[in-house]
Image 1: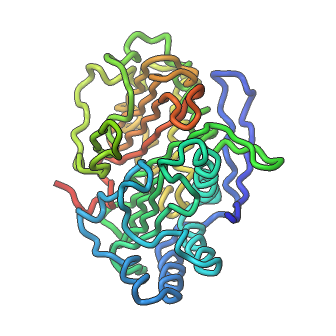
Image 2 (image 1 turned 30 degrees about the vertical axis):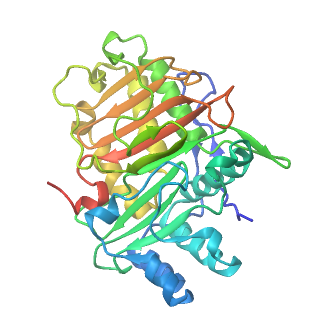
Image 3 (image 1 turned 120 degrees about the vertical axis):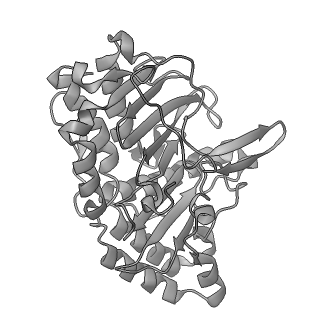
Length: 359
């Protein structure tokens, strides 16, 4: 059983496309303070057996940092699996997530696991289950020295670095299938905040010729690298493309922020904010200052492809700033073949993995 967190939604204006999206209040979540997260992390580690603790705490190296994937459990993960923990240990592991993330980030974590309980029976060959998610620490959790909290499973990767060279919540991957689902008498839509914000932004810029990106998009551009095989699990599936090379100049990046109206510019801030709402405030606040600085926004581009309502496969939205890189792509359904599903990634061109592995 997954204990769910509370995360309310509030309307900033109307519900019409082009108006501000519903913003999550994120009340009662963790602050992401390094000392508090380290305390919870070390308390959890102390409850484990020696074998489990050895799996949980790994070296903070580049090769370990880039070991995350959006693919099912066929791609091996670092750490301990939630399904291998008893109720007490699983609750203690979730307590680490709760203090590191906002209530919204915790809710996304919980609900993406629930989504696998809905999709799993449709595609049993992929072994999609809420239990098949992992937690690991790269480096010993500390209030002062660098370490990373890594959460990974199908359609989810949180890589939160504490005490690194840079404040860092990235790379952060989230995806969902089905987009919306009901369990009992409750309906869930884990990525509503992000998908609504990006759809409204896509609609707002769709009239600008510069916003249209060349080519078509079947998946994210700056995510994990893997090779598909017919009749067999994919190979790879880790962030081996890091450090990534990002577009430069003004061509084929989208419409520039400065060309937008004030109302459209606010939608850019809202869309970026829908991702910044996920980590705890101690992590998110310095990133917000960097991303939404007027000089940074002036050099930020919004690009789109396909349908701006994000209801058709191939629809794609990108925010590309001096540091922030956010993508969302719509793919055809796998478990629910008559529907679509989302893949999304938030990266930081400077601070991925805490800036510990810069060129």
